[in-house]
Every structure is written in C-alpha cells, then in structure tokens.
Picture 1: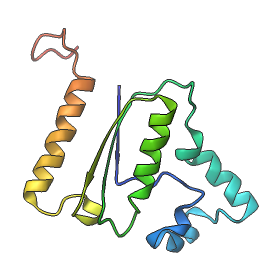
Picture 2 (picture 1 turned 120 degrees about the horizontal axis):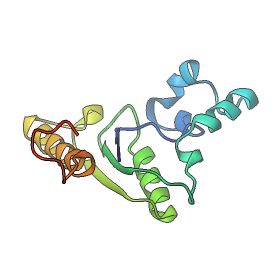
Picture 3 (picture 1 turned 90 degrees about the vertical axis):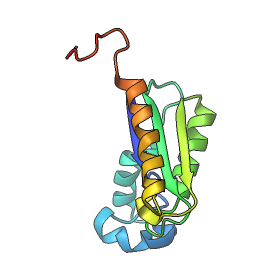
Picture 4 (picture 1 turned 90 degrees about the horizontal axis):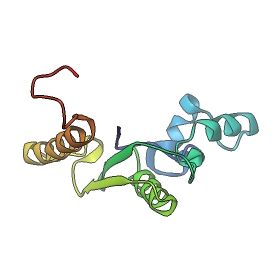
Length: 133
C-alpha cells in the first residue's frame, strides 16, 4: 500500500549528467552504450511508469543540498507521477545533503512525516489495537 523513495536515483538514462552521476558509470553502466543503455532503460523507474498502471502511493523525499543524487531526480519523477494521475507525496528539505536532514530537528520532522505516511497507508483501521491481523 505504500512506497518510500528517499533521495532517489530514478532516471537511469540521465544519471550521468547530474552531479556525481558521471562517477557511477562504472557501477551502473553507460546510458550512451547501446547495450548498457537498453538495460538501464529497462530498470529505470522514471522510464517505466505506466499511466494506466496501478501503484501504491509513493512518498518521495529529497534535499535541495544533496551533492550525490541531484534532487532533480525526485522532482522530475513527482512531475511524471502528477501528469500520469498517480498519487504521491513529495517533501524537499532545503538543507541536509544526501541524508536529507541537516540536524536532529529536521531528522525528527522528516521521520515523523514518514511514520505518519506509513501508519496511514499500512495500518488496518478495522483491526483491534495490538492485533496481528
């Protein structure tokens, strides 16, 4: 019922164009290599969203100051989800780098939002408290 995508790498055909992405070609492969590019497209979340597909609601969070995975990945994916009519939540912290939390207060805020989202999506409202169902 829920997906959490934290400081995500989502566009596998352009990851090498943003920030540290060029240094990951040895790990993921090169989008400009025909064979590797075809494989990367097949596993790229951004390139595999089906407008007619059914997905659980996604909670995306990122950081404007992330120096590893550019926040453009999450922004672009959120836009695609919106255009495709898929439900999602999006949070972008201005500070914090790749951890998406600059300090304990921000970490607590981010985790609180995460736990509320997961509780709302995963807890069965009809189950009695303490039930394993």
